[in-house]
Length: 206
Image (cartoon, rainbow, N blue to C red; front, side, top):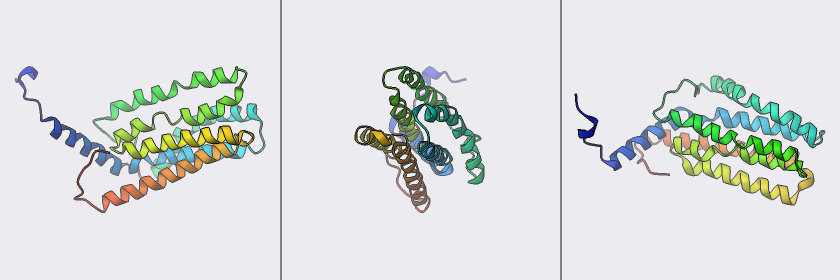
């Protein structure tokens, strides 16, 4: 039996290339996890509709529990689109749980904002907080730039609306997040289709 201490480690560049290939293959295989942002778009569009007739307290009372419907909705779309990300096995799958846990840590800030002198802060905190895991998910798919762009654009747009149109924060703000989700899903499908059409493409770090 060969000792781990005497095993010759693989060349670092070769190892990185193999890992990138594995991540990119998963991205193509799962269409970039599209069912999840599709579900996210529906969630935020629903909140934009709720904002047309509800005050902040009523909006939050719906937004918080309704967020629990995103994952089940994503599973439905995964079945429809034949993209079962739950059953897909990956060498980097272990990173998903700590990534999601780190994202969920923003929830205490929501509750603190609700009890503060500025409870309206729950809207941008929710809008930005639910995108904190996107850069890491993007790395997992070897598409760091695309997924990070979603999170950054989302943060910038939410901040802009918050300061410029505060009277429309329950409608325009969630609607903008829904549209960013839709644009991201389109970008993912276009990118996946491009990669599928070029089976001999050269892997690049992104």
